[in-house]
Length: 116
Length: 112
Image (tube, rainbow over all chains, first blue to last red):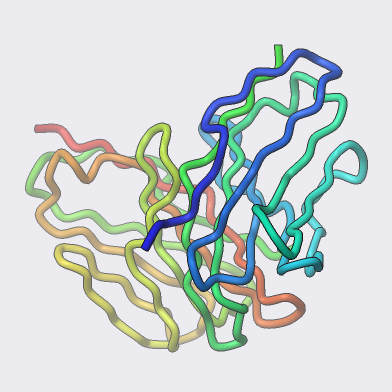
């Protein structure tokens, strides 16, 4: 049973380019989360999606960032017109549908974005 | 927004010593998860806690869900060099979308 898959593991972009990060959840998981981690810092929630629906995007920057989880295929985190401050590790996690009494969440290996 | 205070921020210990770290919040949580992250990798789930007062072990690791539902601690007994890494707590919010909030991490270094 494969875990959460992310690709690419490393991505280098020049300022102004677009970055597309992909995440495939664990088999049987219908919910995907994206987090950003700066060096020496914790994980900051960005967005929570299920298939074809954004459930919570309260952590997403208002501009340049978008996320989707289509009916078929992986979830995509898209960053348009990247700036140096976007350089970070971006982690995806997946779980079954969240219940009020709790679920476990499993992480992928991350994509390390470097903006030159 | 809800925040988790995790302490200590970092610690150096001798191999064989026991380690204790905790997370506290002003808000209550439904679930606590504890993760370990190695350099360049994603967080790996260590222990999940679902009920106030629950005490759960995983090998040399023991974690407890505080009675007030506002805190949790993680103990590591007889530390070994491979325990080095960053440990994160995560609390599941009790309303809205039930998403997880993460602590700032405890950086553990073990001296052989």
